[in-house]
Length: 264
Image (cartoon, rainbow, N blue to C red):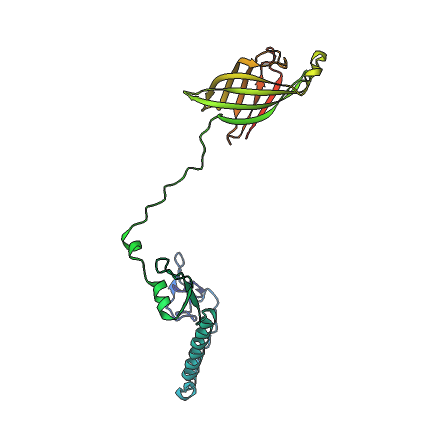
């Protein structure tokens, strides 16, 4: 067997050249060439493809192309100018304010190229005086419980009070302030006549910025109507958005209340 080194097609031994590309055939490795052992393989040689020369375009047939291109370019330029002057009115007028020192009271209408030159003339002050860069502003507020808050307090016993709280930052993570309580609901019969009355509890404590935990302890009160039974302790957590606090109070050591505040 013989093989074409160009197209790798196998032919019989009595073929010396590849009928596809005319390359000399080589004996296939491992085969011993022997005459008459294999039938002759005849492969029809493909006919040569006749390529026709593309027709040459006569130069005379292209004479009208270049004038047509010139006419189209001229039309594009003309329409461009018409569109520009349609958007920019030529009779634009400008009103100049009269000079107060000269005592004139009327306004003068100015038109034409002189006013246009006044508009387009660059300012010498703008060229010589650099504009300082605007310092970046921080969008992140400092995490702190200081400020005014409002919310409510409720317990499993059925008591419900609203709270208006003001807290102050004393530095070194210390805070103080007051809570104005207003009784809205109670399950204690002796306090039913206190509904709608208010009392002020004075508190102080500490805030941990890392954990956002606020601990407060009541140390005094202003309660002429005896709305509050005792001074309490509070554990609250400031939200990441710095606008809410939630937690509980000891409520006689039971910590079964809910205390929620929103920043005002």
